[in-house]
Length: 151
Picture 1 (cartoon, rainbow, N blue to C red):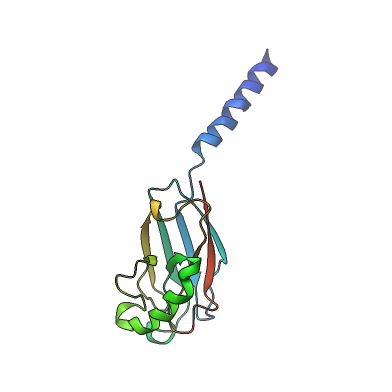
Picture 2: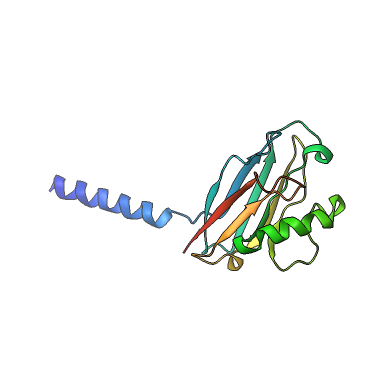
């Protein structure tokens, strides 16, 4: 009987672990004066009501010299948004105002600062092809990554 109780207890613990496994709804990124994010790929769940992108600028340079942000787009739109971001300028955090291709974007921050943005979970569909990048002029080629969206 003790073996049976032990097996039952283990089965219940395993089931509880599955039930408690929450979907990943927060992406934490770091970027510094080396013009790179600390991650090239992140995974989030389409089941999230809101998906948060948090950015910590780990460098020391000011925003005017080495500013960073996080812009989220469909991968097919990333190059066009990055190009249009330069035209938007520093006052707009290098994010084109009202651009429907931008699914979410943080403000631009300098060394030692942090920022975040919440994106409605419904904007990112499971299996979709999405990219995050920094839109500061010249950064998007190096500071970008893939967003994997799971059900």
